[in-house]
Image (cartoon, rainbow, N blue to C red; front, side):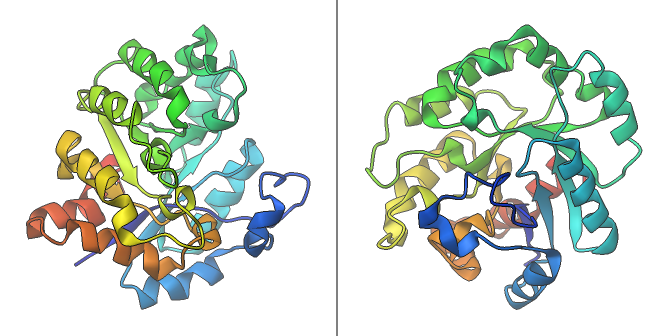
Length: 277
């Protein structure tokens, strides 16, 4: 079965810029580049990937686009642009010239203001994406889900959104609410997808079990349905808690009872359609 990794990262490690990589994440305090990922994709039967920004700069977007030009297995890029800029349409027009640039992301989880995404300038910037055919990745933590619920009604139903990493539920503490209720509300938006990614890093890094994720995955299967979910490894961030192949086997275990078509959607088709790969 064909597979696409809809969420992973590349970087040249910089201790100042990448200060979010704390001492307990020392295993990823180094460079991670396409030459590191390629053998993992090949060994695990993954046909390609979507490279997602990890730094909030246009330099990051350009870095990922340059890698995508060099390595055909990078099928798409989710970059960063200043969505609050008064010049946003000009920047989007510029980036629309790059066929592998599929969408944008802002690291909302790192914003101290939980209402950041509701500022008029940010909403205006995100609203401009549809004109240029770009998607938007929503990176938040559970405490920000109430703001996401207020955020989505501002946009045309044709604008494509995807929630990264299940919105990072508290898997380690087995907490399910209010995450479950809020995700069920969000699932009512047919233009909103969700990535089954980043799960081991929200669990107990050293002692997680496959069953730890069952509630969260099953809840999303019930609410979003198999047609709006997609696989992502979150490599190399996943390495603090799981090897690349474990991210695949973990998901495979939970969706193996689905129909072949539903599994194909989660592994490949949904990401290919969402990102227009």
